[in-house]
Image (cartoon, rainbow, N blue to C red):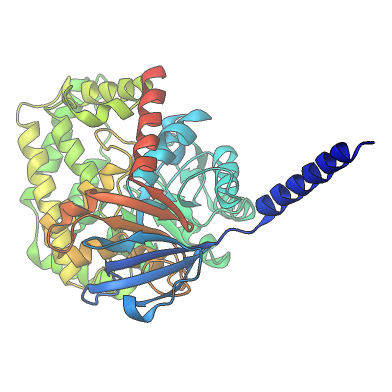
Length: 487
């Protein structure tokens, strides 16, 4: 072998060795956001010129920028003029409500992340989809928010929605609660068609199994009884306005009076209209104060989903406008469901239905403001992807509605951050910006305490310590649009 050949072999070997060493060299696992104003949502004032240092999935330190040492090789993000707050939690969604298997992965989850939502409470869905989704997200195989879930609803026969497990008696209740707990659900979700006996049996079984139960106040149960039974959260204000009536027993009797043998859709809508009109006419300020005091005493949380009530109000007379820009993210299959909902709510409606629904929304907003002032804990939720509720962006609309109802911007933001973490018993790891907590954060271009609508001005999302800048978020949205066009 010639000297030249030997030299070439040695040089090739050294080059390969260098390339191997370069590839194996560990990169920094640190991310630093510098010179940013931190809104930690503990209730403290915003802290300007802060540096937040993240290692892998955790916040390791934060403080005045001049006092934080940034490790060599860290990725640095200049937060000058920007605002950092905890990632948002949508405390009422249905991740599998947009169809499986692709609906969740290519529609719901990307829209949630792109809108700064890093935690969701799934309020009814298919375990066959939710369990693997949660696992893939936790293992880093799928980009998505942290998910807690109930699985199937517990409801009467016939159930209001699917998936559902029918509970008719105490044996059913005990079996269903035990089965769901063994499947790994985080809580039990009760629905509207449960009988009284079944509901209270579920409450007893949940207490015995040490698992929270949440959901609707069933039609045959009062909100007073739900609070006394230990229901941890009430969704959509179900039963709340009825509890404010000076004649709740009379309203309940009318509600369950059997319809005529030869009923018609027109008559059914008419009865519903006059029942809700009576609900408003019998509203009692005294009873409203009493039920608020009951909720505060029993620590009964409320997830008002005002955006859902607003959608129901608008749906009485308004289709989702064709020019609504967010429609491009909604698959055609989902839009058909929305159109059917609109048709069903308008085809036989009374002429004054829009006015009645608007008044109910206003009264509901009034109650939410009064509950906040009365010490009742509020959670922000949307019921996405229900009619006219756009996944992800709907939560920002809900925050604005909570402010309209009387919450301060700080209180509204806490309903989707600190309150959510406290409710989920995760305040040690999320809900505020602090050292040792999960690096689930949102970087904003404007201060949401000045105007709650500034939560929509998202510059970046940090999810499990991974930085998703504006271009990455726009790519998520573009992929959602592409999926919607094909489905």
